[in-house]
Length: 123
Image 1 (cartoon, rainbow, N blue to C red):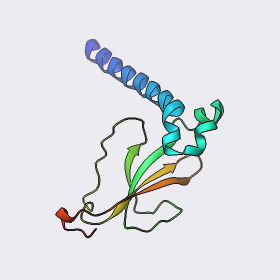
Image 2: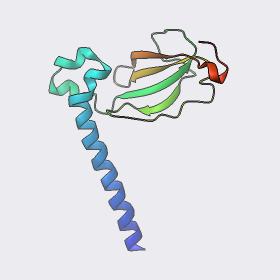
Image 3: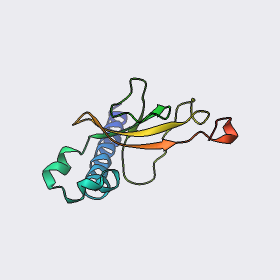
């Protein structure tokens, strides 16, 4: 039993360490991709946003300045190639990816996702 608990704790420790390393890489190299204005930001700003940016999916094409109540959480923003599972409503209907800051409670950016014709949606 002790070896199982030790293995689980070891895996959890590795997961946390990799997440921390990934977060550090994001705040120094990836934040400029999400927000170009952050290119000249100092170390305190970068440490503040470490656990901050989340990606949501919202259906429809409206460009609102707030996070819609029906937004679907996809996961934390990160550097590199990520695969996010979009909700079933897409690709038949257009939607958008929303970059949301937990610290400032505001949308940082939006990316439109048009409906795809092969799924029955209109472009």
